[in-house]
Image 1 (cartoon, rainbow, N blue to C red):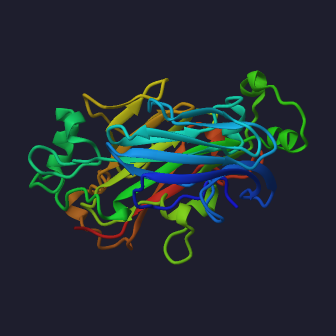
Image 2 (image 1 turned 120 degrees about the vertical axis):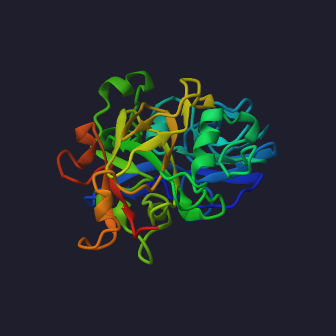
Length: 356
């Protein structure tokens, strides 16, 4: 099974996670030993969604033969430093203002995290409206005027953004790109019970597989009835004027430069080295943004008319719908798998299915 199997989920205030080993099939068919947080028998490193201000309780059962832990950087009190093999530990904390977070295993960092012990932790707002009533994924009390202005402009009569407001109820209007990388030599050494020095992992890390939500290459772009839940969380699809929030995170050790074609994205949030999440005080439009290890950035894909298409030619009459645009990483090696199979790495696409 993939390292991270993600699906849109309803919010809860209680979760039970089990740490256990598994075998993950890479895009080229190679099986790699991994560790994962299982939420049930089918979901590994599952997406956890909560509501701001609620008391959250998480039980973590360690079914591995080695100690592990649990931590959500940037959320005070959301830490279990160590859980002995075969033991269960509990942590309770208050969900912070809305945002995108990562939960990881802090024990022997960063070793266990890159073996697969990581997952997304999403906090939804208690009040996600701007003062003029436009829906946002963020807490009203934390909104900067600039971020609020973006969501007010959407579908609000602005000639640039005709169409709809961002819709927090529509799951297709929110996507998740959780990047990670795998060095199979490290995983094989842990599987063979060899001693791996966490302090040397960074300097010796040689990734051969690059994933988004545990998937690579073609698997990230499967859509519709044949798509896996984690693939459905990746590929953005919709008509012009259907803005989509994309939560981007990097749980691995390699830095990514996320590059999207067809539209510029608006950078809404950022996180610092300690995991603290903040909304931008100036909203930049970019077609590429850097994701360092443990970095999280929320962006808005506006679903505008692609700027390279003249207004006179819009809506498209000669080209078939949908219009598909690639997303790849400007750190070129990340587009490969197994040491050179292209384009089988951290790549996907988004599509515009029609005009307004």
